[in-house]
Length: 112
Length: 114
Image (tube, rainbow over all chains, first blue to last red; front, side, top):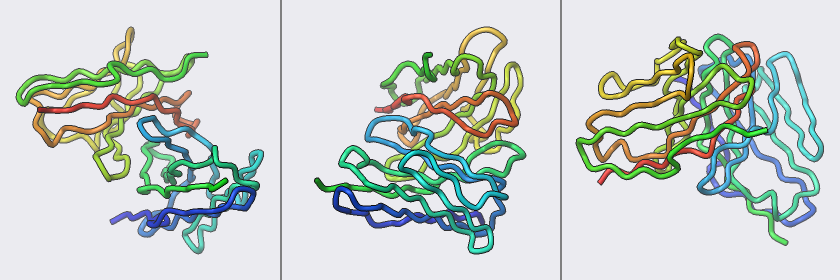
């Protein structure tokens, strides 16, 4: 069955460093991949979408890569700030039904 | 520019009662998705609707759960005869249309069944 794995452990980094989060998947061929941010008690907030024919996408301090051969996406936050502390979710879509399959998320803590 | 709106934000029901969750999509969006997030678990897709149409309900439990998105008014997720296992956060998301894959989520409704 389809499986999405994100860093199971919380990620602790120092302010100003680059945070790198990993999303690996198996038994799936997504047409696109999305990254969301979720704060406690709130709904996910859309950050970036990358399609299967794109290698990399950037938005301000965020960068996403997508390797369909490795079945992996990397999500980078450069010059991290304590306000970036949250859970980050990876979600895959097949482009046919638009339903998203989510990973369980990685908790990022940026220490001042 | 109001985002996706959901109400109520918190809902408490006794076992056996009905729960009705409402979702108004973002302005200009005609596609709605419902997801459920159980404690310590990831978001799970439930159903995908367009106005007056169910596009994909592959994630909906076979019994007690139903969803609609009428021509006028919000989308409704209805859970009949709730059980303790239905306690979860229910999120609604919307998108512009079928070709636009970006989904924007509401704040969620936290359902507690006592």
